[in-house]
Image (cartoon, rainbow, N blue to C red; front, side, top):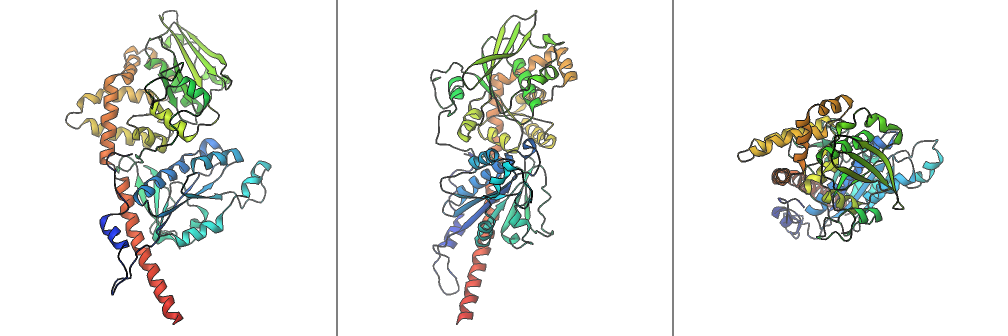
Length: 480
């Protein structure tokens, strides 16, 4: 949980008093009124899962987390609109957006398609548009974002605009919100430059890995003992791009220096054997500082297969890397992986935010979201320029090197620049850990996400309550 956002309570003092005032002369009274809040989000619409992803739904879940914390006595509902290609993808989205005490509503973004492949037929059956329209009518406040409007809002001709606030992706306007446009929905900028990030850490009831292989090979960060694990050191790479995984593997080996400890690499994506030569050219075996590096793939039956071997006759030590790619990483395992990973590689707004919330600095996939990377660099430079933080400035270069897409020409450049290669080892040092702690503490201290949502929500809730009261009074007058 954000260190500066503890104990914020239900509402600000004034609104709490406002909601508990009994009806009296000159005051309508709102005592014991139920506040209804809807958080809505839409999966990015694309033909490939690599582009659709899960991040937009995860963004909505983080927004819901803030709303529930700010208004714990309100009735909250969660709506997501998906463009899943099959039931497995929908189930993954559903698992991200399932809560014990919040009802979730699902919209099928493809439901108007006349011709659908067989694997999408069962998706059309789960489409709750009428229920969602009713939710929006009854809501006192609607928080929406970041990728496109859900259909009931997009088709409403601005009917719900006065009680809706849209949030953008980090550093990018959505294009779907506009105070003066036909939807009339105000948009909140998000990102490093405006000091609004999702930095409230999530907590899950499961404190041990649920996946059998993760439980065996990855040390539990919440336990002081290794629980019999074969390994105590692991790295976590979260990204949809295969080249990002290959890049992380190269950097990992360089960061490890020439020690002979075995490490585990947990990845959300597998390497295609047909691309090994593309990402790891055989003509550069001396790029790695080891006598040999073996990459093992650990299968679901716990069987190890060697999938790549690199040899360098000038090296001294031997290195084994055990790669695990779970079929599905449940939320609690994802959380533990980010907490326990020596270094996290992340590719999007939410995965980066979650790592920062845990007091760590992730390696960012620069070329997926260059503008986000640039914003993060600017924030780090600003922090390092503060009095007393000058010692952290030199650590930015190895961090940026680790995030560069190491194409063949870059690999060649690093090959002939041993000082730059060795500098990557600083990311495993004590000074880097201090940098992570101090930088993320500074981000949290200056973060304005919670206060901004609270301010917008309270103002809108006040207006909707008065509007409801006026409508009720008018109805009563007519009936008399």
